[in-house]
Image 1 (cartoon, rainbow, N blue to C red):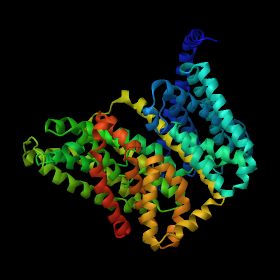
Image 2: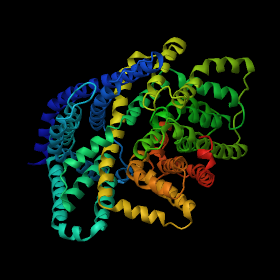
Image 3: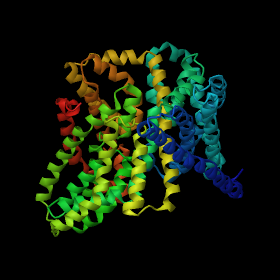
Length: 620
């Protein structure tokens, strides 16, 4: 088939593909949006019935758990259709258009392969779980786990449609041959791989994962395909284990906080709460030299962690401050550098999803993590404030008029309901009114009431897109957790975890040396993998070592999270840095050299957090 025939074939398919895409959007987005609302209503009803009426509803957690896996898989499907799965695009951006198109076709073929390999195991998992019934509702558990099978079928359909729409037959054939060649080489090398012992882990979980990530394959699928390849080529374990582990990783009830906090964060921006906070802080500090930089830091401290997405946190703050900061003579590159650093600084602030994930995979108390996360972030904020102070002294900025106290008082009264939200959320958890999973629903109801009654900025037209976006971001995060859980199981069964424990336990310098090495390791992992997949993979392995060496688990968690935040926002690989550039509408090259002083003072803050455990556990 020549090029003109191929183009004509794809053009003829464009109409049916567009209709298929629209149908798929409605078939996935509408149910996912409804599920977000249902999960919020079910969990909030559980809080009210238990705390207000002292009559607990025994079925709320059970029903929420059943619906949760469906929400996670539909969200993952939506994220794939919208191109919103987390991936490393650095190397893709360096490629010429033709080569990039071929590599992206290769990545889509990997998605098809991974999903296709899960089809039979997903069906087998439904069969196994069908005999299990839930205690309260007496539903077959197969109803819940069928979500995985439905999800992989839909992902195959989406990926195939993308190949037909965007790739030539020649490119698809070439990519299929390349994948087949790699599979054949691994199959041929099976005796050698078996003889290598645990060294073969480097082939699959360093080489294959690294190659997939570098080629722009979404992180979840990179983890998944490497795990499947490892089990198929070096063990006799059935592939259904991958689906079992994915189900276990994605179904933890604590992780239901992920979509609910993402939803809450979007509501905060929509209802005007975020802007009210920023306006009040600007009235206090906007007139001093560098004042709006301090406001940005304070606003990120207050808002961060509630949305579940650093991009959402930054997007809620930057548009309210950047225009005025530019009027005062600030450079675009400096603004984005500060925004990026503030995102790294605020990673430990509750209710961060990384904190929730650590609690889910390591068993550390969520309320203890919420309490312990405030001081490390404060140390980071103060470190950045010191740098802002000295930089502002050397910068001739446009003077701003100081507001009178009456105006400041009015802005404070306006902002008071917004300022109270973080206090409400943390108090509800600490006082035991609601669990870490349920507290987000309290925040959602509070924000809706405040938006409707006080600020009167509730935009009903934006609600549906927010619900769909919530499902998409949550699905992307949860699929990573599921695939990382399967990968972590494979690493554990190989004996790697025992070797890692021995290696880390033998680090010179005792527990201080262990914490320092861990901090450096998590900085690298945060840059390449982001926080949640890194903590799912290595948290269950390293936290027991920390406990055995006498390191307080909350202190260790804060060091790990703060270090991963540094990596996440450190160029050239940290995706958080590029998110900040996109939000600030600045080319990365303009901010690349300016971000390092900010990251440098945050590294100093990290060393202080490492050296002074009291900052993490002093208020427990």
